Length: 312
Image 1 (cartoon, helix red, strand yellow):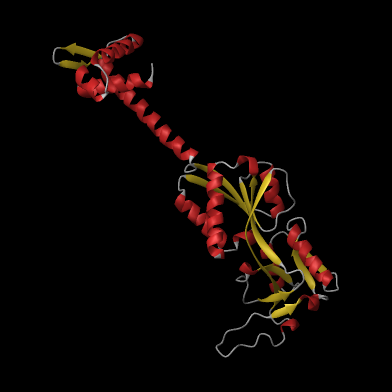
Image 2 (cartoon, helix red, strand yellow; image 1 turned 90 degrees about the vertical axis):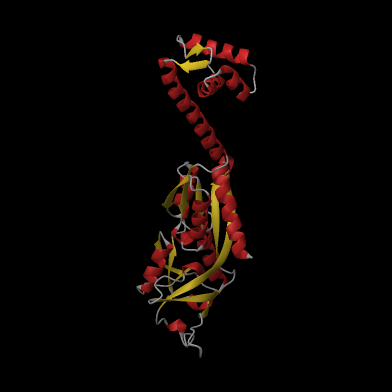
């Protein structure tokens, strides 16, 4: 039994006449009658009662009509869903992100736009450090990671840098380095202070652990050494948001991406930092290169378009 046999049967049942059904099927009537006879022989019972004016369904034919319609509907639905999956409109995507990457407005914009463009794709969202996300990708627990600077270069991974932004120094309110730089302009606006990294030689630093933010950690160490000192690391934490909370508590100073300058504004002051090399924080997408299927490709392409539109 083939799907065409079911379609032939449905057409005859609708028309209640072999000749009219054959016309709609664009075939001759005798071959159509032969196909229906072959179907009845395979089933072991008659589907139609033949009479001079046409045909009527037998009791078995009535039940078979319902089942045949259901089968063909399911086949058509499967074909539609398969086509959508092949184009990336259905499926699932597991995304991991670091808290500092998610703090940038680009990331919520990408996820919102993707949900709107591909509502049939189920998004599974997870948070972790850059190291954790990279390990989860290697172990196939994630499809894509959104982080700052990559942690190492795992084999068969593909990296897409969407943007980069300046790092800002975070000081507790009232810190002596702020001096008079917090004076308001005439219009009431408070300019962002500018601090040279050389003035931080005696400050205790609060940083994300080296294993979780290798690139940014090493660049800060390099900038401090270029300024003539080795930074004093007071605390190493798992998340950049914790950095800011500890600065607010007066435990030290830190550096964070510029997009995080909205946190604890009543307790900390964000400052531009003069340093060599210039301290920047990228936003990077990372995925397994050999498995870039349509769902993942659509996400990456959309993310790149939105990032490019923000840069222009």
